[in-house]
Picture 1: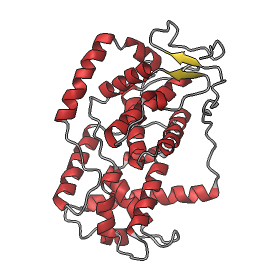
Picture 2 (picture 1 turned 90 degrees about the horizontal axis):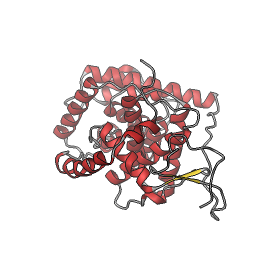
Picture 3 (picture 1 turned 180 degrees about the vertical axis):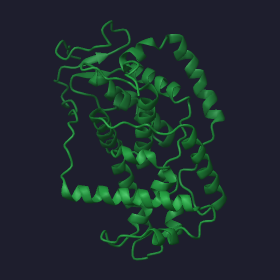
Picture 4 (picture 1 turned 120 degrees about the vertical axis):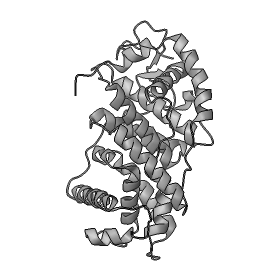
Length: 321
C-alpha cells in the first residue's frame, strides 16, 4: 500500500461548484434507480439467499481494507455519542461508520498534524448521510454538535457529503448485519428463556461495539449477524460451542454451505477472544473533544469554503461568533 494520495482538506478544495450542481442532479437519479434493502428480514428464505448472493459478489469484487487508527476510533466514538444524542437507530450509526470506512479505504486520506478537524467533518457528513437514508426525522446540518475550536457551516458539511457520495459511487444502500437479525433469531434462537426482544437488543449493542474492531470488516455481514445472534441467544457467557454444534444450529437453512460453517466458526472464535481480552484489559480511553459550552462563550472558528486558509485552520487565531 502506497503513501496517502491527498489530504481531506485538499480534496474538499478541489470540488468545484459545477460538480456540486451536477451531484445534486445525481442525487435525484440515484434515489430513483438504486434498490433499497428491507431494514429487517423475516422468514423469507429466497430473499435472504438473494441478499447473501449480492453480498458475496460485492465482497469478492471489492475486498475490505479497513485500517486501524486513533483517528478512526475518535470518529466512531463521536458517531456513537451523537447517535444517542439524537435518538437515531443503531443501524444508522453502523451505516455511518461503514461510509467512513469505505471513504477512507477508497481515498486513502492522509491527515496532517493541523488537519485533525478533517476527520470530525467527515464524521458529521457520514452520519448526516446515514440519517437521511434511515431516519424519519433528520436534524438540520447546523444541529450537529461541534468542536470547541471551530464549527462547520452547513455548506461545508453539504460539500463533504457530496464528496462522500461521489467517492462511494452513490451506492448508499449498504447491506448490514442488522438486515439479518430477525431472520437468524427465528432460525437459531430456540431457547425461550431468552426473549426475542432481549436477543435483538444484545445483538444490536454488540454490533455497534464491534465497529471498533477492524478485523470484523473481513467477514461478510450475514456471518457477523449469525455469530452475534448466536452469542446473544446464549444463557451463559461460559458456553463454548464446537464446530459441529455450530453447524447443527444452521442445518435447517437451505442455502447454508460448509463454507459458511467455517466462516461462522472463525468469526465466533474471534468474538470470544475479544470478550476475553475485554475482561483482562481495561478499554483504552479515546479523547473525544467536548461539546462547546451552552452559553457560547468559547472561541470558535467557522469554516467556510470562502475562507482563504481553510485547508489549515489555526488553533489559536480564532474569532468569537
